[in-house]
Length: 496
Ligand code: ADP
Image 1 (tube, protein in one colour):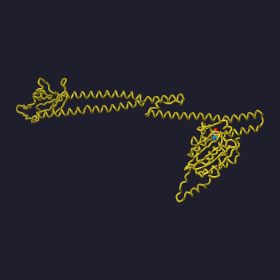
Image 2: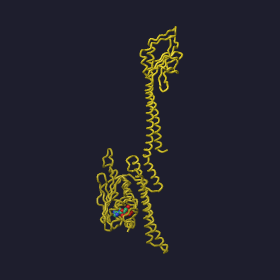
Image 3: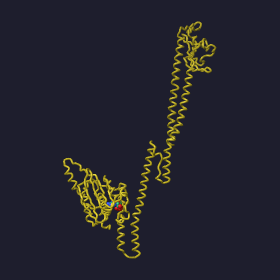
Image 4: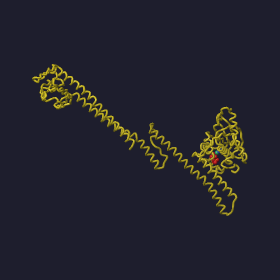
């Protein structure tokens, strides 16, 4: 059952119950009140007549009731009165009943006072019939007093009509509500239709209408469109990623197959081909290693240690490692502050090696690479700058994307997979930091990494220095074997 039908049914049911109850109250309450008032008047009149000096003549069986003087005035009034003997015959009646030979209420004769509504042709009367007894309790006759109910009838008719009109109005309002609610729910139907079309056509570029509305339906349409946008972006990047991965794997495989074919055709071992094959295999294993790392990082399956790390020591270690490698550029440490952060030392080394590796790769022989570490308030700042080829401004916003390379051929020839900066960015973000790049084509590139400093917690009873000294001499952080040599297991001098 649709929400619209359900709403209408609930509305109709609530309205019906409220209407019936209120109609009963509105119709019967004033009616009863008016009748009660009339009954009171009739009773007073009957009492007035009977309480005046009524005399019973036991011997003759005659009652003498002196009728009030004003009984004649009843001729014009809407009040009637008659006395009836015990046989039901009219003894006397008020002047306005002249020519009226039937009892006011033939069915009301009994042992008790009775108030009844009695209809005489077109008129309705309220009649009180009260029995009259003698001193021995013998029934002598009856007094019947009545009042015309013209006004009362008019009132009842008007009331019934008013209730009918209000019922009609309510039914009309139900129709209006039905029309309005179907208009109200049409946007939801539109949204459902578009959602179905999207599913059927597998077309995430479609958007649902009504997103400019300012009500809840507009909110829903906007939220739905935002979800679609995000899904579309994810879907596209996944497709691009898959295409990139297959392309990256196909290139080295083609090269390996070509060299193997060559050796088979000439039937002899070729040292040059073997070197190429080995290089390509290494490139593939590096690529797969990087892919695996990013995939695990994406799914949260890459645990990151949170230990105090002396960033200056890490930088020295990376520098020492680089220094041992033969390279066509000079690498120098300019300024190194002491800085401790909370994190994973292996990942931080990987970050530094990725940046330094790039700086060396993309700098012409004779150029220089500078490394520095400084502190700024509660942040550590690592800078890796080079005097290399630089990155064009239009490429800068993309270089942290997976597989994005400014010069594909050059990067691949250098052994790059296009994942190094994506990994660097992930490491920085996982440590709560930020990475930015400034570059001028032909002049050089500067990567700046900011990481939150670790505030050594003050120990009760010991000053800050003692706690600091304890952490600095903590075993296990120093001298740990690097996860590989240079980035992704590659030596810079092997690239040439
Ligand atoms: P790659 O494996 O291709 O080096 P990265 O993700 O490490 O992949 O880098 C992405 C791209 O950014 C590189 O292909 C290169 O074009 C550019 N790039 C990165 N670092 C530098 C740098 N220091 N100088 C110039 N270009 C750089």
